[in-house]
Length: 189
Image (cartoon, rainbow, N blue to C red; front, side):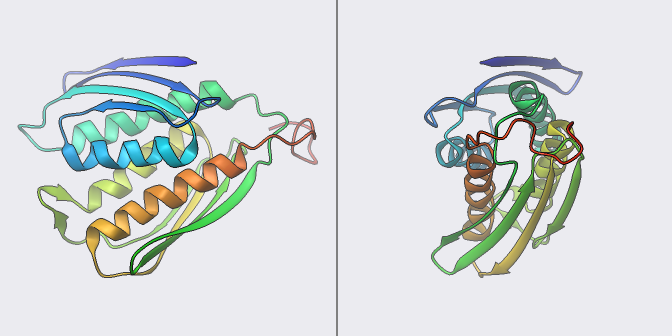
């Protein structure tokens, strides 16, 4: 289990993650929809997560979402790296009713994000552009590459939840055990 604490003028965050967990989640960020997405991420990745954030949500949700992404990425990096005996590459498409989002991952130490998702609109007060901010912060601090690509759907909640589920399933698959040593022809990641 890895623990990360991050405190700025805008947020105070405590995160614990265990990649050998069962998907248990204890999440409290003050942003209900975001909590729901983080619980979804934990459940479908099989990673136990405790995430507490006291942020300036009276200003807006941006700092909370971005900083949780940063701290979660740092915690996952500490849990996973140095990489050894994992599948490394994985993809998944998780559907939620009419919505489908595809996620391709490389846990290879080279951060990169391709994000082709709707950015306009909101789910209650939660701006869709915040989803990209979360994944950008997570991916760059976890030091992985992710392609998150919207395939279809009309319901914003379904589309975003499909993205979180797809990311979680791809992450679970990429972390699956494989007797291969370092999964690179270079011999190092």
